[in-house]
Length: 349
Image (cartoon, rainbow, N blue to C red):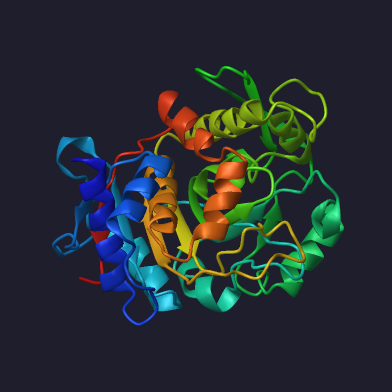
């Protein structure tokens, strides 16, 4: 499908799904520009999968194109709906991976995520310590932040690197051969990756890929990724090597879990700054919705396309492009983490 036609379809979806919230449609020239910048076609389906009795099977479009399910309903009910559309059946000890967020940030609120977390038989909210200081660099302080943000009232919380790191092999990487994750990583049978999609001061944006790479990496692993695998400075390394290393670390996590993982991105409070920032810039664009997929590249790409298709997304687009953020998606697809081509399924239709 031609890029112009595809992104028009994505934008029309946004307008239909967000009636009363979304600005007027972009001009044809704006759409062409956004499509060229985001560099990704998408296939739009406006209908949800047919309901069946019992546990639904994951719906995969014809040809193996990954499905990305979306609702404009940013609520506890909307979150459950988009999760249920996947037809997933997590069993055993379920890890809900999220960012606990710095105090003052746009972290995901417990009233939004609580029903989903508590729908699992044996859930644990998991995180790892930061490598940059702040309120979450020390395990004891990090647990206090998790309590202050209401997460310990939902489920047990595990700071997975409080006892150090374990090593995952990286297959097919150009920067990393190993990825260092929290030592408790292997304690869980299934990962539900719950990400707040937003901008990021270094990566350009943060979503599913960042949550399974930087987010699951131990403090030492975070420094390793930021350095592009060189072991040098976290802050002065090659930018593209850092972005590629995020994709490579994410692939090591995906490979280790062998399909026992799903991804949900919440597109609200769309600041140019991430939840590691305790004083983020106030968002200047509208909330969009909640997206879910079994493919981390597809769900992040769909979020990118929706931002590029939004009339008020200029600030976030500038943040992404100024950091070459799309390169993470390019490299992730190249090494086999997922697909930038997807089918967007509108659950609100």
